[in-house]
Each structure stands twice: as C-alpha cells, then as structure tokens.
Length: 316
Image (tube, rainbow, N blue to C red; front, side, top):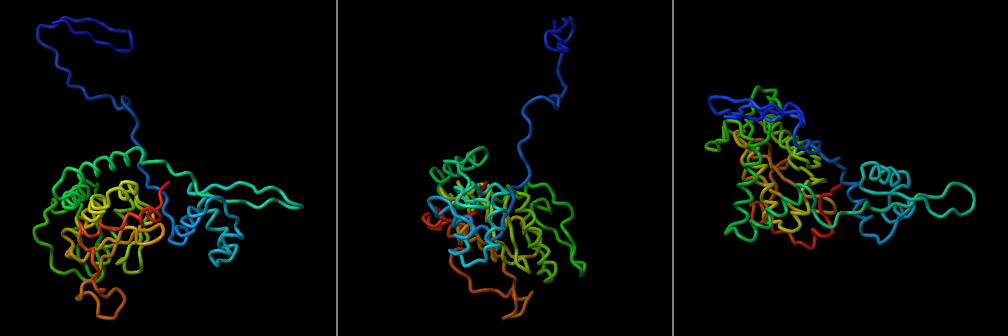
C-alpha cells in the first residue's frame, strides 16, 4: 500500500508498506477555530438595570441632569450609573452642542441592540423554537434539558462545607446525577452555602446574579439567552428552572421550593429558593413566603410577552 505523508504544506513523501496505515494521531491543537469567549458578561446592579431600562424607553438621549430629574436621584449618583453603563458597554455617550463657556455636557443613550440573537444565543433560540413547535410538552423537555446542562457543568471546585461540618453534595450532579433521594434536611448554614453555590454556578454560566443576605432571592440582571426567552419563555425559562433544580440535587434542599419569576421587573428576572420551616422560624428573615402561582416550569415560563418586550435581563 502506498501512503502519502506530508510534513508541511507541499512537502510530501510517498512510502510503500505491506499493511494498511492507520492514522491514530490526534488532531493538532493548533488546527480548527479558536474556542469561543468563555468569560461571563459583566453583571449590573438593579439600580443600574433600572437606569438602562429608562434609557431604552427614551427616543433620543438623556443628560445627567435630565436623568436625575426623572428618577429623583442626585446628579452625582445618576452620573455614576451612566458612566458605569458606558464602561460596561451597555450605553454610549456623545458631547452636546457647545453653548457658552465651559465643557459641553455629555448625552447618553443605550448601545444598539442586535436585531436578533447572534452566536450561540441564535442556536438556543432555534432549539427553543423547535421544542415549542414540535414537542408535546415543551416545558417538561425544557426542564430536562436544563438538568442535563447542570450535569454537564464542570465542578466549581469544592462544593463547600458548612461550619457545622455538614458536607454539601450539590448537583451538577454529584452522586453521579442521581436524584433518587435527597439527603436529610440540611442545617441553615449548609442550606445557605448550597444556595450560594447555585448563584456562583449561574454566574459561571453567563448570568449576572445578585443575591440577598440568605441567598434565598437571586436577582438575574444578565441572561445569556434572553432573546430566546422572550420568544419562547415556556421553553427557555423551564431550562433555567431545571438547571437550578439539578444544582440542588443531593443537598437536601427541596427543589419544589424553587420559583422562577421571568421578567419580574425592569431589567431583571427573579429566582426564589425559600428556606424550609426547619431552617428558620416563622416571621424571621428568609421564612417561607406564601407561594405564588408559577413555581412549576410550565407556569414560570408563561410570563406575558408584553412585559418581556420592555423588561428583562440586560444583555451586551
């Protein structure tokens, strides 16, 4: 058998062998495209998300003084928010026409938003649309996809151990993804560490996350596939819900206490992970709240699209 061996481009030798030649070498690491961007987009606070939402409502530009007057904020506070939005790529600024002496004022406007999802967000939108169109139960399949996503996540280092020594076997599937039997109810410290781990995992997945003191409420200010969520919330929001539920597997924290509120306010979605009655007393911070409709995947995704058109996690 004659085999052609090329060392470099256009430099080849021909050799003859008695047996077939099998190429067992791996593809050189320099071949193929470079890995895509892996770092998460910059999260913004709820206050800055509200300022960004206000900028997007205005057909034109706003000065620092105009924003301060409309929001009731001090001019220095408004300027700080606007400059931070510019620095993180959410807004742009231009100099106003000069009038009289002194430097002209800056005028701010939101950065242009792509007409549709791009990159992997476009793929997510296409897959969500396929499920919404062809699946008999899009929400259930979305939640299953979210659980698979969690199990595919790399381990975020040590899952943590509480001060009382309670180990945390937290999902993405420790215990090899077995959801068979959640452990006995964890202590309050262990449960809080579990919820904080969920927040960290969401940040690594590209979400902008802010949590309250007990990590029972997570405010999502950035969503990596928010465009797909606006088009098919029943599917995409169910994916996110399944992701969080799977991250709780093995921790002892019941996944039934997870509630996702899509497009809960200007620039945000909200995730609730309530403490159980055994972890906090009634009336204390973090005590269970009356459950609202929408704790399941199907109902959480059924947020009105009109709200999503004007509010939702900010994207770059």
